[in-house]
Length: 438
Image (cartoon, rainbow, N blue to C red; front, side, top):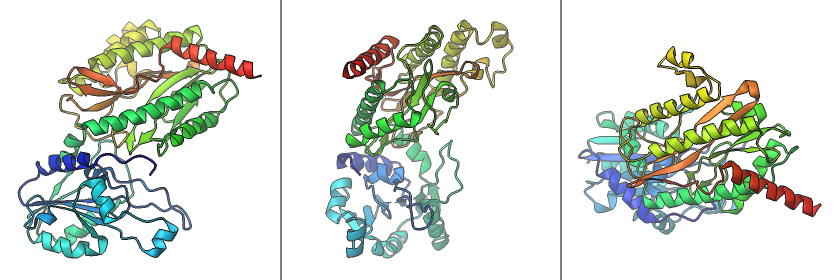
């Protein structure tokens, strides 16, 4: 990893919060993600499972964390098991964490090598009645791949069938949604890096540039600032491509008169930034583009104003739908009659704004969180209304990252331009600079 490590106190606190909610005589087990293969002898870059990362800060494969608050031996109340470096690994991959480095990262004093796991686990299982396992219960999760956590969970259930097995997910959904100050700082760093990327492409964008060239400009800026790259696959869609919600090909030229939709964010210390902005290819919005853009911006500002402690997410989404309905009627895209006859399950505004306004953000882009509780201080949400008009080849989405605070909220991505006047002024400045350079 390229990032500076976050303080171990963050992970100590996270484990304390988690352990406080465990039932009596319980052990919780967390595993690293697998390294997933490609073809031949290749593999994808390692991406750590975010639960063990949230609990320990350990960003290394084949790691295991055990949390057992009532262990008879104090040294067994928190244990890390790590892959031990040998000469071959050191030469071919680089050395793995030492026990001292693991302690500095996590604050966990008991660090063992993986070969000790089975014997220690047997000792602990004789003391516990309940075992908490990670079960992957995110509402949007869709995968046919068995994870290491699922595979190891099946093994321990087979080996100890008379224990009771419980789910960590309900606890993690509640706890991970409330970010600690060190997490806000990491997310602010990700936002600052992302802002630098947007500043770079604002000065690079012009007719004839290809979407993938813009993607490359972002990546250059992110990597040079100690980001590990994109927090998710970037969406850079010019013209009608902006109407494809998950357009990731980024393989078209940006033409005169089009608007480019950028849904691009950096990751820092595994924390994601998720931002969308829309810029005119030639530096000037047409009257119609301006009209639609300003409508989306008004909805976004209205939505942000609703974010504060005590707000229920479902009620919030309904109010944003009302804001969008009014704007679409003003734009002539839907009629009062269509609104009056709309299906409550799929309101009229969904024809042009078909996705949700907000989701949790953190170690995962669509982060853990509960959807049936009021907003609380420390939660972080995206706010991303959009209007997509395929018949006009125009898609506009504006997205910021908002922390809920006691006073209401803080916008982590406020430095990234979204007012039309600022966007056009920056692009004019860049155009003039290019002309002066010949």
